[in-house]
Length: 71
Image (cartoon, rainbow, N blue to C red; front, side, top):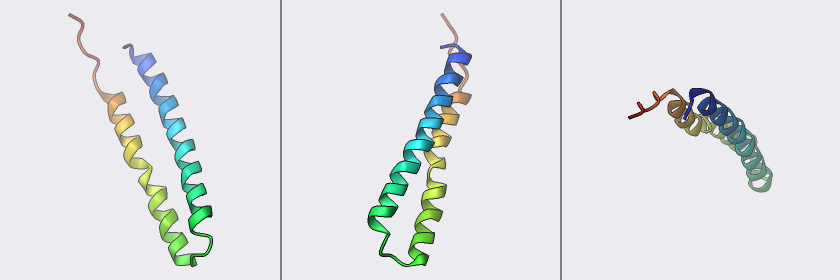
């Protein structure tokens, strides 16, 4: 796989991850946390705001891998 194609795929994966993750976290927050206090809401958004970094790191590590040598 060429580097340009790999970076294009990685860019789309990262953008899709952020959009889907934000939607899921927001839907969960509206459905489950509407009755909760402000401290619980703050902690949820703090944790969920940082948690998306873990899958993004996996995508970025994949992008940084050197291409395999052709035989």
